[in-house]
Length: 298
Image 1 (tube, rainbow, N blue to C red):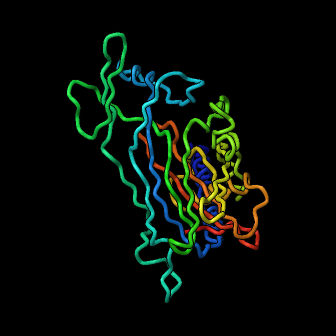
Image 2: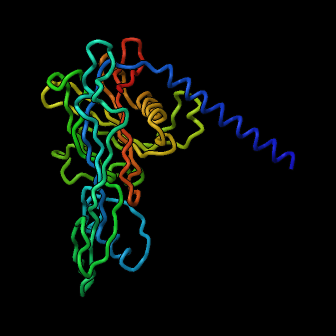
Image 3: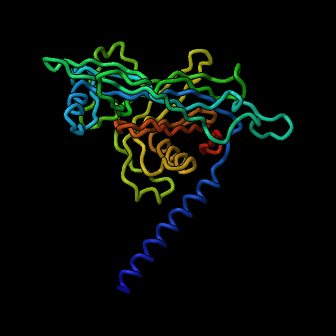
């Protein structure tokens, strides 16, 4: 019994030490004078196979493939969104602080839309998405499939670099990566690299966590000519708080971003892709500094 008590105490000391190390690392992180604004929709989906399984009270495995790899029809709808207002691009002129109209926390909202369905003769599906009950149909939520929206980074609306993004769960499949319908026109095929599993090492204490599935993308701004190095990743333990999420994103950037230059913009969007009834997106952005560090954009 005494050995067990000492073992528990030892584990508690290790965990407390790790948390303290992470906290010190975060406090030492430089802060950029840029701001960020965005609106990103979280879309969920189900395939026809998923719906048929749910109809007979089975719990399917929520994996998504391109049409070329899985012929089952896919039903996609927006379930939620995360927003940061354009006021967050500005500073107060007298104190150098972020605008008083920029909230500390992002606004997260959910719609009431759910998938209503019935199985017709011949196993045909009758499908509808609604925020109100539909007569004589079963109802279900979906699994997180896609994030789509626009991100602005800068010091004002007019001066910011704006980036349009679309990220979906299909591209995070490491063992069976998607095959583009047309490699010549598929934007994901050119702007992003295949997903890999990355072990985090900065700070070194993150090495105790399991590897993270992630893929790097180079997103171009249509008007400013600037680019955003964006990591699309599968969220995990670090995404429980904003500050640990930023540490995790920075660690991914150190692993994946090749030869950053001062002033380069970077960031991460993570989520529990394929998670049933999940819409929680983890978002963070950075500016690379002349001293060779990633400064967080708050």
